[in-house]
Length: 309
Image (cartoon, rainbow, N blue to C red; front, side, top):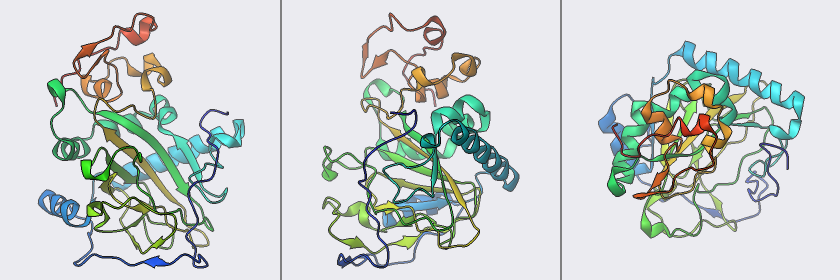
């Protein structure tokens, strides 16, 4: 299988022609709007299951990262188009996706996002204390670009079916908006209030959802409890780029083994925090299993697991 690719089709199209019965929203109250007020962000997360934090990136920062993302996707597509298209999470070949592992190696701002204060604060508050105060980990990291004409993604949870919903959140999720997210270009669709629904998601119904519209530089915040999905891009000329990062407890296996996908030279001089988040510790839930056969460059980056942040 080509690096960065995936197979199978499990995310079902939810187009207007979908014959499945609609499951209406069971949410009463105003929808979250972009805000810089942390109290409002926390209230929206509790009430609706998602929040929109405004102004975390400047317009220039978002645009620079957007341009770099486009260049990296073009670079990968020229090597092998399967690296950036045809993923099982998409219903057509119009969207483009790229692994955050590549972005970490190639452009520092994509590394800096990982240790931004707001996601780390929210993660600590939602996931709670861990064994011996060990650091949370970056569970997953990627970027996607919806292109004009791309279909809506099936509404889903970012959660393993093996973990009962009654256990509460096991991941925090953050979508960094590099473009304006509007309904026309495929803004992420949310099912507000679904974070309190303990019924497993079903592919036999079509969930009523709302677009989380947000300006470039904002961050959509939710957990693996919330039903959501990429919207359809019905525009003729607008793309929508987002960087998606998930954090999980230290006992959860991340999707990406960062010490094996990251160039050690890239991490030289990096903070203890980012190395903890990327899994550069031989300790897990209190037990040390030395990395006896790890390359010297990787071993040199190992840090203690206890959070200083």
